[in-house]
Length: 277
Image 1: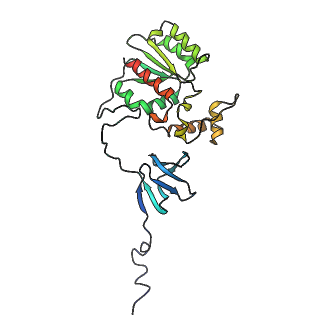
Image 2 (image 1 turned 120 degrees about the horizontal axis):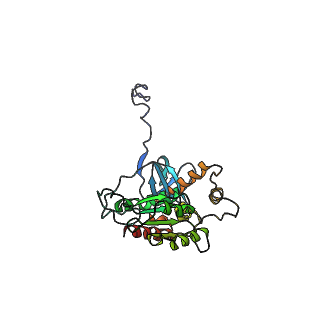
Image 3 (image 1 turned 90 degrees about the vertical axis):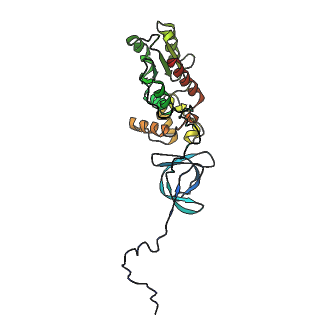
């Protein structure tokens, strides 16, 4: 007589006997997935540090951890990092230039690129880092354009040691504009190139599309700009740690030069040309 209950229920493997296997799907670009928890649907636009970035049909982007909890064509899947694809041609750096394969960093030149703050330096490094190492250019931060004149006085430039300076909010009539004009008229002017972007802070050099927002928020006068941005976007803003976390979140959305505003791109390229000529 058939035993409809099977044999030993405590035999090895009884737990897995009827368990459904969930397929692993590589998180490749443009694969459309649904988040099982809240129904968010989007196409994969990138992966980084164990996270997958999805973009919905309205252009809004969100980050989720790789792993289970996703649906593809209505079926549960586990998203895993996609294997790197062999390049069909020369690799490009994040700045869009052709990468020099297996090249060692060049010994640093005497010339420097100076930027106003740590965030500026980190953004330049993320997009132009490969190019700067290949050219032997070091990026240093000033902690404010107000300190530029003192820096030039203490460590003056010359024909072999040029300084390229990137300034936030360099527009006619601004404090930054007046400082730049004074330096250019001074004794070190011909060995210094000062350029800038028109935005209040380097945060705005990241395109709204990269962040999945329609535009950068308008911050009323009297409110510290970064705090106002965080509040408008619904991010914590009470402490300096909150502001630092917000910047890490913004920087994490920058992958190539396409995620930056043209007003910054041209200026950085100009400085690289100036200090390497």
